[in-house]
Amino acid sequence: GENVEQHPSTLSVQEGDSAVIKCTYSDSASNYFPWYKQELGKRPQLIIDIRSNVGEKKDQRIAVTLNKTAKHFSLHITETQPEDSAVYFCAAQINAGGTSYGKLTFGQGTILTVHP
Amino acid sequence: DGGITQSPKYLFRKEGQNVTLSCEQNLNHDAMYWYRQDPGQGLRLIYYSQIVNDFQKGDIAEGYSVSREKKESFPLTVTSAQKNPTAFYLCASSIGPTSGDPQETQYFGPGTRLLVL
Image (cartoon, rainbow over all chains, first blue to last red; front, side, top):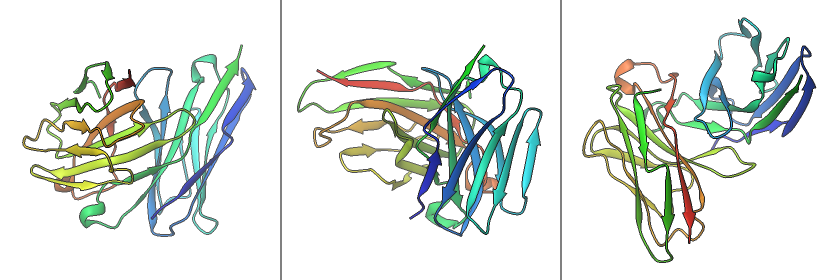
């Protein structure tokens, strides 16, 4: 099955700096890569996603890049703010259809702390 | 994601006891999922269901059981066979196979924290 590795496990930055979180995946059949943000005690929420036919996607201060050859994808947050502090999870999905429809494999999570 | 509810917020289990976690959604989604979250680990898939009366085992199904008798509901039972049940349990839903697009957003409920007495 798919395996997703996420690094770093913790990341501390100063407000205004950029933050980068990286994930690698094992199955070259994976073709959908969402990122979720989870604030303390809250539910995970989708912040951005990318499909395998796209190399980069941006949404305001957040961007995701995908390198299919190397099987890794990254989340970039620019001009970080204290409210960006949360746990971030990457995930990968194999578009195998059938009974594997919608099945996501998550990374271990990154605790991002943005210091004012 | 406000359309997914989980209850209770906290649940205490005694040794040898089965407990059931509730998950309800009013988003008209066909697909529903149960995840377990432990500190320092990502979300791990327990069971998932793409349509009523059908479900599949995820990566860590041992010690758990589910049913999907109604589209809106996907309860998870933590059985006495699950020796380490203390965790945060998250339910999620997505549109499902009828959308024709498996790359769809999963919406999560607020979670249930299960503790062992």
